[in-house]
Image (tube, rainbow, N blue to C red; front, side):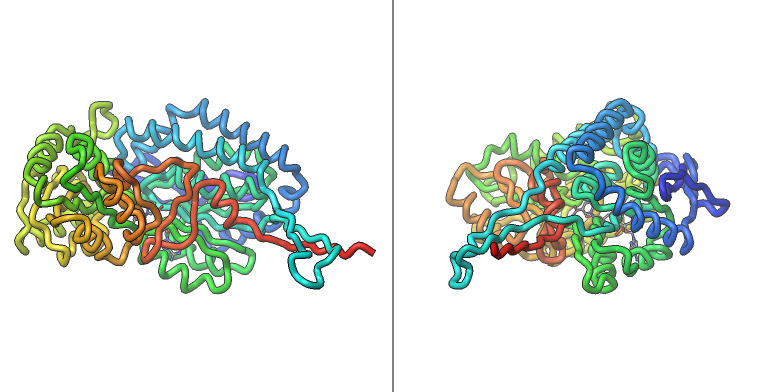
Length: 470
Ligand code: NAD
């Protein structure tokens, strides 16, 4: 598949092979972009600002509706592409495409609602008879850098609000799974001025810094690991920055919870996309009073999951993104078991597949819960009561989302107020995300918010206009 620069698909002789994570077959190649390609994309994006600004909000909205229709027509092939590109089970890829189509629709709607406000200037002495209002204006060029695990929806979460607010975009998808974002760019380009959306391929370590430090770029919207996010924030200088980084989200289950629902949430939240989800359930915090009952059901339901070929509609858990990632997960589990955790199920790797794994008696100090473990692992930490649950939940450097199951409003509200995270989800797992809600973490999980309306706020600047009538 090709890069998209200034409205043209571009190939190169230097290529990167893209492999299917399930069987390691080469499925395609993408051009290995270099300094010149990045510069061409930046020049095109800079030039396209005027064409975008010449469009009315109504025209921008109509174009986004057009993209929505075209993505809908291509939904089946996009879902298959996600599955061969990143190994996501096909039923979950279909869900990702459906969400993406909804995300672009939110962009089409929000593009017509970018309002300023009237300022009551006369609230201050000296403001009598003065008119003041704000306008929200585009920033210019947005760099959108995306990870492998939701290759379509996370790209749309950046491109849709950027275009809705009349910014041009330089998109750099992950080289672990670039194909769906490139297909998306090709589809979108038909509806946009040349250069309004550019998609450049190449390894982050070779072209990333050039994009991030370019004076043409006004805003960086990055989704990915804490490590790369920290590097980008050091390079970004005074540029506006949104960082959607890793998570280590807890699922707390208290003694008064609906156990059946909590077990269902733990299974779905822990193993969705083989645990490669930023808001996946990465720590299960159980009140000791219900722990044994919960664990028995949790293990039973986990054992029923089908692990294997992601293209098979029956598959629940597909491969990890590559063998290195699967070995890293295997090493974390082995280390935890050596340090005293009890393996209740799973704990086996076959190539890139890792069986859904539950570990009991996990200590908060173990690496498997101190760091984000991006795999189908459910470490259980036992606690007594809400106070200890909140303390354990907060005992990491991350703060993305958290889930709590309880029927006690006081316990729920204590979690809502005291858990340090971008969101607390009551009686659903941390994985719950509607694409219009404000989304983004605190602590090392990041800065700023996505969720179309909120991303538009971060992709526009406010200008105050003051009129002093003569
Ligand atoms: P990653 O950090 O390895 O890569 C993300 C992107 O950064 C890729 O496009 C990569 O090419 C690029 N990159 C690498 N080096 C760069 C550099 N020097 N400059 C600029 N860009 C560079 O992440 P990944 O492995 O693709 O994704 C997994 C991580 O993403 C996990 O930590 C996960 O929790 C996180 N994630 C967060 C969210 C969220 O919304 N908070 C969503 C999905 C994934």
